[in-house]
Length: 184
Image (cartoon, rainbow, N blue to C red; front, side, top):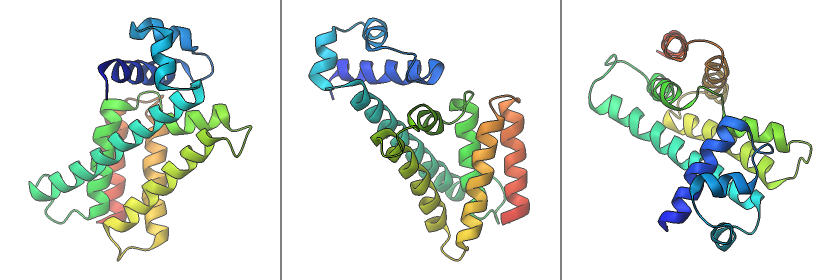
């Protein structure tokens, strides 16, 4: 990927996360990225395409983060030896919360802004992200029920929402405690 495209996507994600999707125009993204408008259009035919690429990249980073830290915690003995895959995923999500989620879930924010059109590609992508997360959780421990996977997703989503108005590290810590109670 070209560095200009990378800079553009990075700045767009920051601006969308800080201000919302509809309140940020392409001109602001271009100016903050220090690139030409033509460069943006060389990479993206529309703002919606840019939004979709930003969301896809964030999803990739988030899912890689969950997979990496859940495995790392298991392999390096952090936490309890008996921590289940679900507790390790909750711990990995807690790390993401403390580093990336002071303003909530970017996917739910996108769905809120684009949700008037249920078949809009941004809404479809946001819904797909939530399904992917639930499938990832379920696959981490196939012996667990689909209802248990949903409970962990609810716990993680609730923690993400609460971290917007409460101290993030406290919310993250309590989410792990709840996961240990539910899934040890």
